[in-house]
Image 1 (cartoon, rainbow, N blue to C red):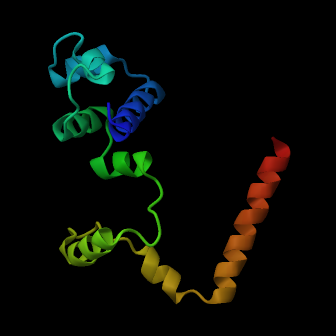
Image 2 (cartoon, rainbow, N blue to C red; image 1 turned 45 degrees about the horizontal axis):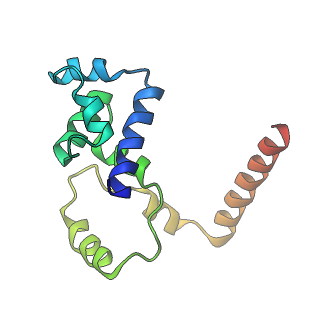
Length: 131
């Protein structure tokens, strides 16, 4: 089984555990036969995008949330193909999907950003000291 498929299946199984849902709970919710998810998670059934989307819906996750959990960090600067696709598709995002964060951050001064980073770092170090 492909490593990326294993990764996605592991994220799905972990999300189920965190949300206290069993295979059977999701099988009932999705109208699947008993044992279907066991076969899917074991690799006996090939994982398809439709499976991921259906399971996301049953878990209460939006697909974008799921994929952000599965792949939280985007390599910088990204592949040439990713940069081209992202540049073209940015104009096609639905209203409300575009994040305000970049425009807010660009309005901050260097000192404000450094202060925010220092405050966050101090908090993190304090939290680590308590554990």
